[in-house]
Amino acid sequence: MTGILYVVPTPVGNLEDMTFRAIKVLKASDLILAEDTRTTGKLTSHYDISTPKQSFHMHNEHKVVDRFVDQLSSGTNIALVSDAGTPGISDPGFLLIRAAAAAGIEIITLPGATAFVPALVSSGLPCDTFYFEGFLPPKKGRQTKFEKIAASDRTVVLYESPHKIIKTLGQIVEYCGGERPVTISREISKKFEETLRGTAAEVLAVVEERGGLKGELVLCIGA
Image (cartoon, rainbow, N blue to C red):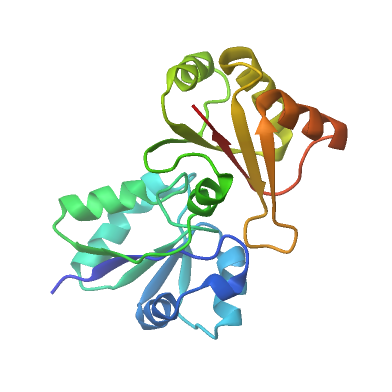
């Protein structure tokens, strides 16, 4: 009998966002694959989870994916987690999930935390249909992405790092126009959770005045 690959979302901020089922699955699995075992270790320690952990991240996943597929095929139940949120959504996991599916291994993905969903819902922008871009390319293809965003007739959701946020907002103004509605949600479910709302030009001015932003950032751009 083959094992099961469980894809387990973990909190994007507050540890209390962990579900009862996710805790149960992590405790019952034979192995936890973690983007960073130190980060996951804080979570497993908090919930008294003693399941062994191994690293599975963007720098080693191509090298080790076959090994873990073999373990699954041999009957090992594996839980896949990232540092925060749902694996595969702008996080490692897709390669293993694809390989497991190709090998006929059962994959069970638990519902749970994903940063862009609360950011999109609380943005006040239309969310009946939207376009999730994730992280933009740092250089090559970036202009093409912004041209696509500018032409979009639906809300666009991006992830961005704090050290690039001013540049990205400036490019939104350049390609989409300063009047385009924009929100930035940061530190979702954490102590300093905040959402900035306004036109692209207004939000850029606020962020520049602050000298940037800290924390995990989700941008929503209205049509």
